[in-house]
Image (cartoon, rainbow, N blue to C red; front, side):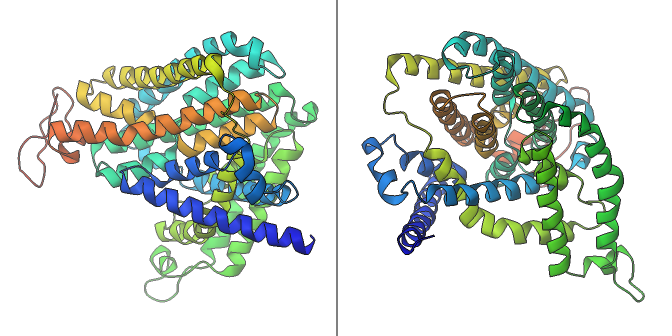
Length: 439
């Protein structure tokens, strides 16, 4: 790196930090999750405005590979945290309704997305048509679990019954969406096809070898004395050596999936998913807090900018606007109809079914990750990528205003989120002592 490149790189990083912080704070002030502002910051510095002059000035082409490396590292750590926080114990007591909502909110947009892909394939398919159809269906079906959790916490719905169902359904959505994307990677032929036959061996090794080994690694930190065992361990802290082992294993898992011809994000996600979570919640918080701090402040903003540099909406034209309208209609209708249908099949009251549909329509950063994978696998081109990024922004921004509107009409988040199934003995809310059923 030359001194001039180093100067440009540091200026670019400073601009990334300032823009993401400024627009993230602005989004929070208007009731949106910060990721909406950060995504918008990435688009605004791209070639859409001023014919790309801002991007050329702040991010010269010779430093973009370095920014790309930071972005991919942020992607690895983000996907690890998503996998680690994917706790299927959330399904306990909600199995039937969560599975129903998840399946319907995946199958309906997947089908509609596939039909839309057949219409768009002639203009936008860059390789295998089958991969293009599967990819667009998967992109329509995703729900952003991390952003959804933030929206639930900010809206007060996190501890309600509807919030629990939404989180459980989104967890299953993530599993289904990443499984579909793995199929897309295989169909698109991202690498040596024969190596993909090793995927079952890799999965078995992660579950039968890596997971028990990680559990033993952290069990070594148990406390001693009269309060030994898990309680003693919970008082311990994750050491630097343990964190280095986790990071090393994470990178090796990414290397393995990339070598097999899949994308490295699958290795990061799966390594997070096999991390031990049955011992201490404090352990999970310690690991995720250490990784999320630098990831949220620096690495993910770099990812937003790198993604935004590939979005050019300046020449969208009338035809592009029509395609954007079709994409938005398919994405919103598919998710809303699927989640609402899945909830109503389990006798969730209509209002709460609508709330659940609004929550499941949130796509956020997870959508951007999937779109980036599709672009890197050459399944979609830059034009469709830009339109899909706009869809991710719109669907994520919709959730907050819809919940605010419904909550204002129904007496607040607690009344909106708690309900009783028909025939169930009405529960009482601690604040009012009155039945919370709104059906």
